Image 1 (tube, rainbow, N blue to C red):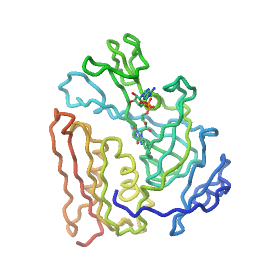
Image 2 (image 1 turned 45 degrees about the vertical axis):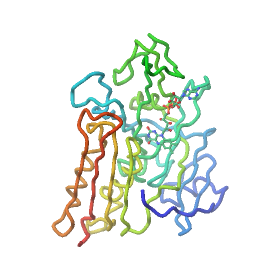
Image 3 (image 1 turned 135 degrees about the vertical axis):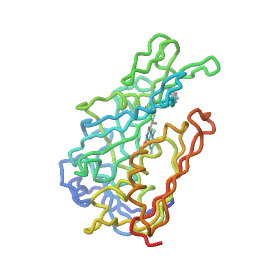
Image 4 (image 1 turned 30 degrees about the vertical axis):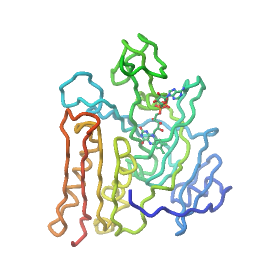
Length: 319
Ligand SMILES: Cc1cc2nc3c(=O)[nH]c(=O)nc-3n(C[C@H](O)[C@H](O)[C@H](O)COP(=O)(O)OP(=O)(O)OC[C@H]3O[C@@H](n4cnc5c(N)ncnc54)[C@H](O)[C@@H]3O)c2cc1C
């Protein structure tokens, strides 16, 4: 994303977590060790409120596999994409505040690559805006790709954690019993989660991809695959959330937002419905027309991939 990299300074390395939560406008909570990082312009953002040794235990409230991305070998159905992603939402009870553009860590039970339990943390870009998908500041959502590597004659696996015959169907029903398989430790843990399951969360972290504060900024977003996650979080704030609206219902954001998203197959495009909704909302006779460009076919070879370009002028812009 084209934005000014915020220059940061530690406000208080030992600030209590409850203060950190309060400073970003959330209810104070009993938290583990916390730090607050301060932007040069004075805006503070939450930072590592929960560390790997004392993670926050949240609950899964939603785990929506994006059905069109589920692997269907040799299928000619429209869902023939070779990667599965899920949109998963965790309840953090308001105790893991974050801002758009940050990441959280997830700790899977393991075993990890070298047999460690629990597994080391994996970072995931937050896909929801700060208020969360329910706009109550109590949830955080991720867009996660299931890592599955299947041995082929021309592609021997260097690492595998399922011997031939050992792979069992995952939650989506996908299974590769005839080959050695490596299933990513944390991504499979997340993709297989059910509503009500516990999840261990660390963070939040990241200050490189925060939205510019200037509401007239033009925002250019470039992403491939699940790299859409932080872009979704920005767009929820800019075009969807109540906090992104003025009292008269107009949007606070006055700039132009561009999204370039690359995926292996045209049908693998993510969050299309939401993007269509923003396109509908953003178009006004006084603004330049929204545009969408998609290249590639359903059977586009992986190397070429498919790129979708979307442009959203602010509804309020008079240009
Ligand atoms: C800032 C950040 C944001 C991210 N955001 C997202 C996101 O939004 N969505 C998303 O899906 N992912 C995201 N990721 C990637 C994510 O953190 C994980 O790396 C990813 O989910 C794979 O983790 P895993 O545990 O499933 O795979 P792992 O089990 O970690 O396997 C990863 C690779 O390690 C290889 N491997 C296995 N054993 C060994 C070994 N002994 N030695 C060497 N290599 C080995 C495997 O072949 C495999 O290719 C992000 C990463 C970062 C750093």
